[in-house]
Length: 160
Image 1 (cartoon, rainbow, N blue to C red):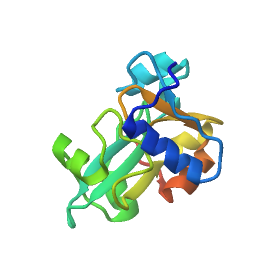
Image 2 (image 1 turned 120 degrees about the horizontal axis):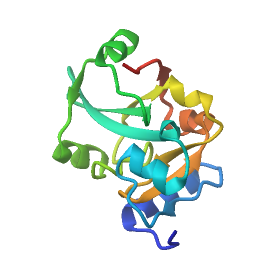
Image 3 (image 1 turned 90 degrees about the vertical axis):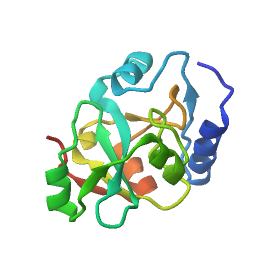
């Protein structure tokens, strides 16, 4: 692991440092772009990866962040039933413009602006989880309680 953080990861580290706990962004030597890659690089299960997925709100066009367990596929129907939000796919330029990060490195925090956040209840079963930290090879460790407090997200059952 490298100690030198890229600008996007430094932005995440600054946010985390300003929010209390001793979270440490780690630059990994291998890719963490996918949940499988991240789990292999970290040495945890794929389910412990808190993958951040940006969707477009079907009515407002605003970004919606779904933080899902690495093994889960998001059920748009479950999200709609629990929140009333109709999810639409977001392309890479929408993601970069709205949250400030490229797909594969989107963190659950430190976005350009406020993002409606929905959290996968399946993540609550793990004492520690890992999330992207701004680049396709940076991560940070936290627990589900911290994920909830940092993102102010809504916990729901969202897996297909």
